[in-house]
Amino acid sequence: MKENEFRDRRVVPFLKSIKGLKYFIKEAVSIRSIPDIIGCYKGKFFALELKRSLKEANKKTGRIVAQKYWLETWRVEADAKTFLVSPENFEEFKSLLVDI
Image (cartoon, rainbow, N blue to C red):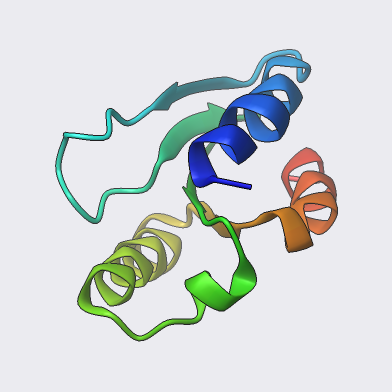
């Protein structure tokens, strides 16, 4: 499954189903390394970096390293909830987000 299919078929419908959750989707041509989805739920800032697989998420390429840097920076410095989400860990992510 391509990343945009995963986003549109699974992630976005899930986010829309949560009352009070606000989010926006980064445009594909916008700033590189910024997470794909940024939002707020229960007063907590969250950021999602979507990947088509965990294998892709574990690569050590410059782009993925930079994406992980921003997720970690926001998690540590802003107490944000940040997630690398793929179809393999989607169910786990759902329970973590709802429990913010």
